[in-house]
Length: 237
Image (cartoon, rainbow, N blue to C red; front, side, top):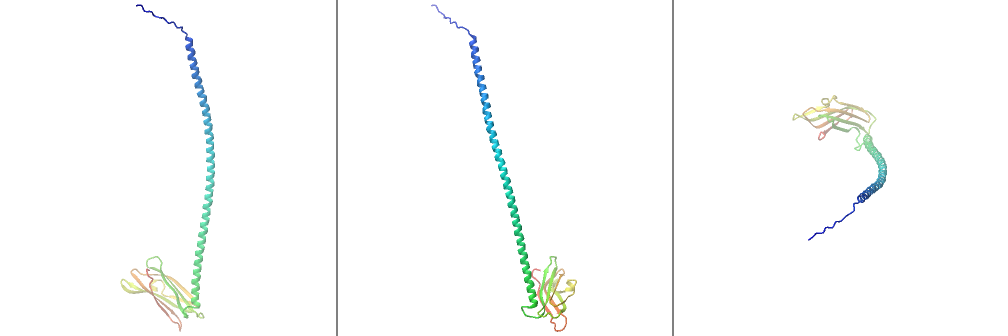
C-alpha cells in the first residue's frame, strides 16, 4: 500500500507582517495621543472649575469677615451703652442713698431742735438729749457720746459738769470706775444756752465686766436741779 503525501506551498511575504505591526503601532500611538489630549482638556476644565470655586469661597470668606467686623462693632457699641447705663444707674442709686441720708439727718436735726424749742414732755431746763456707748473695735475700748440741751428757756446760760461712772464686776467683785480712771478727763464741763455735745473714749481694764452706767449732770447756781440717770450697759458690748 502506498502513501501519498500532499505538499502545500505558501508564498512568504514578510512585508505584510511589518505593515500590520506598523498599523497596530500607529493605532496605539493615536489612542495614547488622544487620551493624553483628552486628559489635558479635562484637566483644564476641572482646573477652571476649581479656580471658580476658590474665587467664590474667597468672596464668601471676605463677606463673612466683613459681617464679623460689623457684629463686633455692634457688640462693642452695646457693651459701651450697657456700661454707660450701669454707671448712670449706679450714680442715681448713690444720689438716692445720699438724699435719703440727708433727709434722715435733717429729720434728726429737726427732732433735736424741736426738743430744745418745744419738747414733747413740756419740761423746762437742763436735759440729757442723747447718751450712747459704742465699741471702737479694740478690746476694752469704747466711744461715748453725750448731748445736753436746755429746753424752752434760753435766756441764761447753764454751767456745770457731767460725770460718767461705769458699774460692774472686777474679778467677780462689784467695782465702779469713774471717768478719770477710764480716760484722761475727770469730768465734762459745760457752758451753753441751747445745747452742748461731748465725745470721747474710755478704756475698761482687763477682767472688768461692765453692767451699767451712771450719768450725773450737776449744774452750778441756785435753783438748778441735778440730773442722775442709770442706764444698762449695751448688750453684746
